[in-house]
Amino acid sequence: MRIAAMSDIHGNLPALNAVLADIARRGADLIVNGGDILSGPLWPRETADLLMALQLPTIAGNHERQLLHCAEVAGGASDLFAYEETTAAQRAWLGALPASLALEGCVQVCHGRPDSDLDYLLETVEAAGSRPATAIEVAGRLAGSAGQGASLVLCGHSHLPRTLQLPQAPHTLCVNPGSVGLPAFDDDHIAFHIHQTGTPHARYALCERDARNGWTVALIAVAYDWQSAADRANRNGAADWARWLSTGLA
Ligand SMILES: [Mn+2]
Image: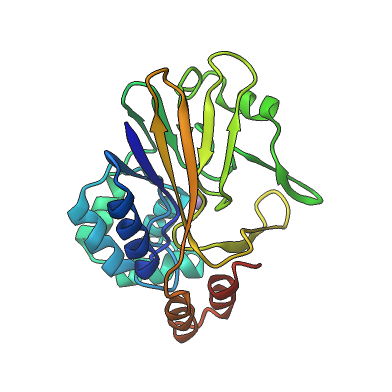
């Protein structure tokens, strides 16, 4: 079983196309989408068209919730842009997505933590900024959820590619594939922090289960025409996105 894990596409259509082409070239039995699909100053409508046709196992992230909330109150710029660009049918698709998924009986997918789409699973935000979470912290965040006891937990939201194995049996392997569409950003949830991969590549992960139920993971960085995405962000008035997209630095 070979699973391609994608997350945090954020409407970046050329990045998504490059990742899908790389997955097709390497081969996968299943492609999973971990949420934060459309929000951002890029191609939300075209991205939704492509993904709705593909019918991949998909969960909602915080930005699906925030985008849909724009029907009641104007939200942040990324969510509002995507809200205004998308069709009612596309927003209905977003609204029907689950918050988590179980796959293959031993794989659990969530966007942030099992109980929060706004908090990171594999990072800890403190007054000084964001740092990698310890295995003890991550085990505590999974305790009592469907992720406890899973052999593989796929998460997203932080945009930082990382694998972490829990210290206690059944030694769940947690994988964040990084972000397909946005390699760096800043945020002030809990405290101001930046997350950056340091390169503008589109990220995803290939997770392959062996006969002993062990997972081999490849964290993959795919080259694509990131300048076209940065130009699009600039044209749509988002100079910060243009910088993040073209450098991978926040
Ligand atoms: Mn998110």
